[in-house]
Length: 223
Image (cartoon, rainbow, N blue to C red):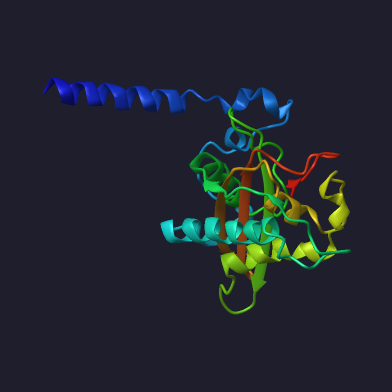
């Protein structure tokens, strides 16, 4: 009986610690509104029209991590031959792990059905980057999550291999560079499928921590 009481107390303490995060006073946001502060519940935004689904299954989450790590490994091993110019240099790009906090923030933003980056999505433990993808179909929800991730990765065709040592913004490369950023260790995503009155829309939001795409910073260490 005493052991049960201790377990209950410990669990309650953990809940209090989690709830103690004040996203409305996140210093790293630099005065910008945090998504969790703006949207304290999972209620979908008006822009969603008729919401069909906003849930990632455990299998979806696993496949998202697998897809990210597949592409990261291809670059790390020097097997990516595309680029402007290519091939991409081999390097140190560790595997990503799923992070539920990043995922919850991503889901809150996906629930707004707003295809723009949110203002702040940071956690206490690190700043967070973000990739967005959207697909609109006329007859049914046909988007594949892994295909949407590959769409980000395929920006590699426009990436200059020489910019690995010092990141600079360029047209249509930022999704790729965040996906393979060497010091990013975690990913968490959210999804919304909705009908906006005309299109069957699939909207994917993935948050990354620590954030990548820092100007004039090495994207990953080369071998």
